[in-house]
Image 1 (cartoon, rainbow, N blue to C red):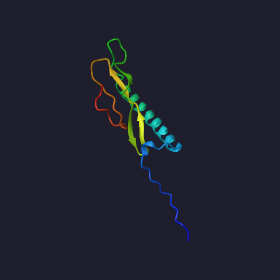
Image 2: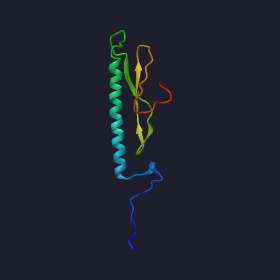
Image 3: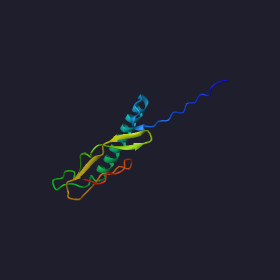
Image 4: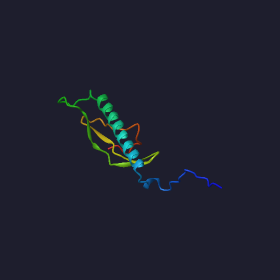
Length: 107
């Protein structure tokens, strides 16, 4: 009698899987999210390009990054860093990504 073989594996701790393929997928996901967020940021800056300081410089500028954090994806957690923007004309502006859930507070 032949024993039945199966190819179903249970992953109890998806956060601690360290196989090469999973790491490659996470790295690729992280890079894709970074690229998409950069495009969103460029669109925000372009949409606010008309806002100028009295000396004619851009009033809405990039200003570093929010703290690094993990978001949960279908392949497990992926680390992301969202850029911050700053307004030099006194009008508050925050950058929010359509892909990444917002931080609790915009600073």
